[in-house]
Image (cartoon, rainbow, N blue to C red; front, side, top):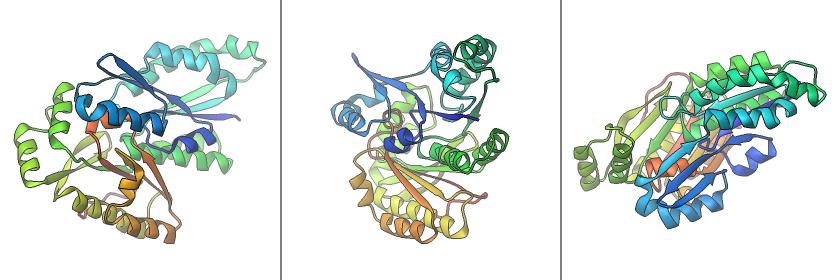
Length: 314
């Protein structure tokens, strides 16, 4: 059985990893003023756009995910021919319409694929499963990497499906933003009142940073720290502690809203890297997607892993 994998471009994994493992990307376009960029997980394009636009006007950006019609056309043109079963893993549906668009598209795809496959010489059924990762950004990478491992191990589609859906319930994404004023401005643009003007002003004045968690579809502050670098160190230490206690997959994903050398220079990064090596946990590092950066601001740090229920130990 030929199994294909689809992620949206908010999934923070290295572009070369995605290409090497044959992922299809559902791009998200970003419009700032008159300029539009389609996010295809190209680090250079993302960083160039960050330096030229995001810092000054990112809070005003409009993000445009693939529509139902675009997803349907992509599947019927290519994926129903290239694969027999496709897993489409999306950012949490509570923060984006991508999951709902893909799910709606799946009905048309399954109704219309037969003559297209027959014309390509395939007389077997086609199936697909849309999976809500229930998290975002670097944490989306956890299910994607696990899907690759399962396919390489020769597992069948039913076992992969059950494993990925269970894993989505145990995937944690933690984020520390740099600029609360930006985060609040962006949230207000999108109609999200979760970051108030008082918290933004006090946070900037006192250099207090929230620790945000994406888990089971809910994104909310679960702690606060003094200073971004101190917060990064605590987040790295928390992740290393979970690695030592045992993760549900041997994977940690990091993403950063800027050049990765800046992230690697943060306190606690080296300790996390060494801990992952010691426990045979693969550490993935990527520049945050353009979509992610316009939503949470330049310089934000995100960590993702799958674990049994726990509290942030920072």
